[in-house]
Length: 165
Image (cartoon, rainbow, N blue to C red):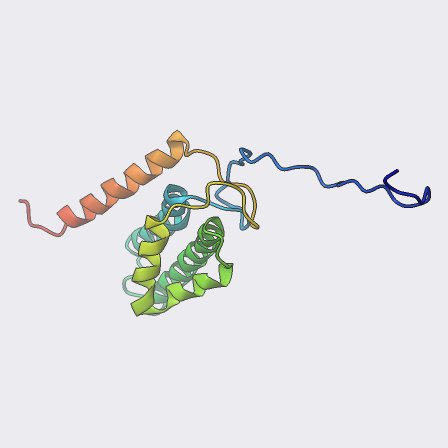
C-alpha cells in the first residue's frame, strides 16, 4: 500500500514531458526564443544594413544634402533603429547559448563588442532545450540566401573602394 491516506492528492507529474528533439522555427520579428548563428547574422544585421542604405539613398534624391540637420536626424533615426534590431537579436542569440539577455549590452562597449561578436558567431548553441526554450529548427533556404546576400554586399562594398575604371 503506497499511500495510506485515501484523501491525499495523487502523486503524479502533471507537467507534460518535453520531447528532446522538439524545435521551433524562429521568426524575424519575435523578441523571444532562440536563434542560431546564421539567423543571427540575417535577422540582426541585414535589416539594419538595408535600413541605413535606404537612408543614404533618400538623402540624395530628396535634396537633404543641403539640409544637413535633417539628413543627420534621419541618419541618427536609422542608426538607432538598426541598433535596436541588433540588440534584440543579440539577446535571442545569447538565449541560444543559455546566457542572460542583458549580456547584449556588452555590444555597446567598443573594446568588448568584437570579442562578444566573435563568441556569438563561433560558438554553437545548446543542442537541446534550455531554460529559454527549445532549439531553433534548421536554417531555411531564405536564411542561406540572406547570408549570401550579406556576403555579396560586403564584397561589393570592398570592391567599390578601388578605382576599377
